[in-house]
Image (cartoon, rainbow, N blue to C red; front, top):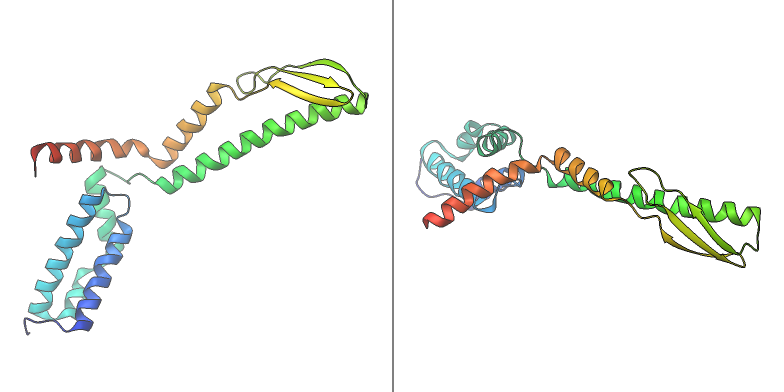
Length: 185
């Protein structure tokens, strides 16, 4: 085969390279760049030997290759920032919605009992979730002090997000990256 590639062959090689890169988004940036460069060089060399179509056929499944790279880098499935966000945000939205629902329910109950309520009313919080709250009613209008989420709720949400997103797998990659940077390579 000839040593030069026509532009369509170069595009097909770049498509394979960037498809692999799209599956490697959980890897550190430098690792992604290294994998892209390695694949590009190997595909161009193989294309010069056997042709681009055959080189891409012999490449195999790019998704499987990316999964193997991720397992080699992290020792298992890599971290998932999307999974972390998909747990973290809805959990906080749910907890703040519950907080507002309990405020509205308590205010609605007091106003239903006495539409022109005046005075202090105390709501006992939910153990380990909400603090106690004090409502001050003046002629049916209320202000609230307290009733916030307890720190245990935040710890549980962060813990669940870390578990679902497998974020502990980021640490070994950061350590390796720091070791590479400190060696000057």
